[in-house]
Length: 362
Image (tube, rainbow, N blue to C red; front, side, top):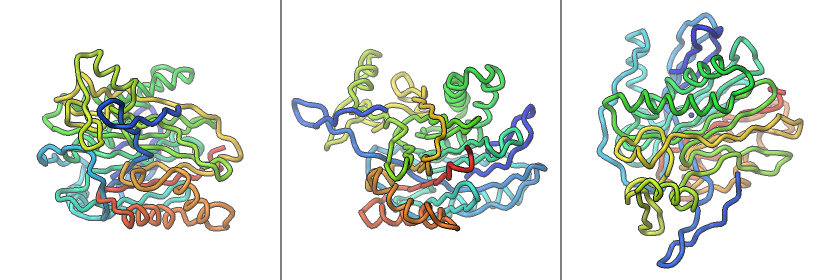
């Protein structure tokens, strides 16, 4: 689980990571359509207070999925050294659970396991009070594929690696710090004897600004006065820029049953991990920076298990009805309602949804 680095006072940590492009039609003469928004779900939750004491784990969920890529065989996932046998046991139990849920003052999370066999492959990160500042935080949703190993590794290391780079480069170079943090996490993971990979979307809230980064098809959507705005770009092989990049490196993409895949295998063009495709599937994130304005209401971070079935505006409408203009916003209930909506529409993927209230970070 992500923890504050030694040079930063320990924050409260919870864990378990645009542009408009014309759609492409997939047929013999043209490129395929760029799928709508997409994201997934987490599983273990560790709560570490500012005094460093580990609290109890909270178990995971049940859910859905749209078949979008060929999955390698399931792998054995090593147990992270969490410092206590009790915590290790709870972590293992949570892998077998079907739901994960967390409700806090600034954010809520709900994750549900899809119908396929094996453990839930989604994870999430919520680090509150960076540098003992309640206005600074780090959030993320990670959607693993080919096992949960990459998502678990990134959930434990991504925030730490980014903050190391933030301290190293100073306040003026945060975008580069985010880039280096992603790439260093990928390099470290590639040294492990673990297969698979993970998509992720992260949000660093720092001095009244939000820095939204992603690799793959996890997505961040913001409500700005009730209008949905996607803050991330889904990295799909169907995008011309991504196809051109892969081909320039000697790789190829093809379209099968309406889905574009890298080397006929992976349906995303950027991710952490994926050793067998590393030359073409890169971990360099796309980052967008915005100053938080009074009409910025909330952020939705989710895996593609949600976005494959629910549009950006639909998601904002559901959440806004339950979270804006109320004395007691029902953010956790809104997370769960979005997951339920995706499932009723046929999703069989793991689904993770995080809602972050923005006004308190101004």
